[in-house]
Length: 191
Image (cartoon, rainbow, N blue to C red; front, side, top):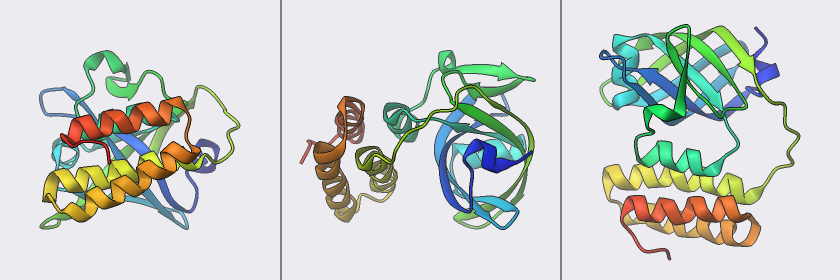
């Protein structure tokens, strides 16, 4: 399988990773997939995502272009209605495509390295989209928001506010809706 066909190139590609719990409950969270040469891995903090991979060593990279789903999956749980099962594994219904991986974990104290080997993939839609700085700012804000929720460091709120400035300047209605939702989910007023 050629990961380039799925837009997973050298560097870090932001996807929504779906996993399955021991009790077969799907979970989704934004994760950066690191690709260097032909090696693919994710650095995953102690989380539901990591716990699921440790008990069920599979994950699906869902390629999406909806900023709202990034925010929802970063800061809340997606309901089962957002998933469909492919060979008994959850993928997001409205993804542009997905790749299911076999995972091998190297458990760390706070962060673990998860090596990923592609097993199966499907492309639903090929979309030509120029880079949208507002969309990218939502992704950055989502990353800062998850860190703010975990650490309560005010610096992350300043970073989110900067991203929000970019969204207001460069984003469309979806990006603005995503930022509004982000602020609500972290329990802060928009700055």
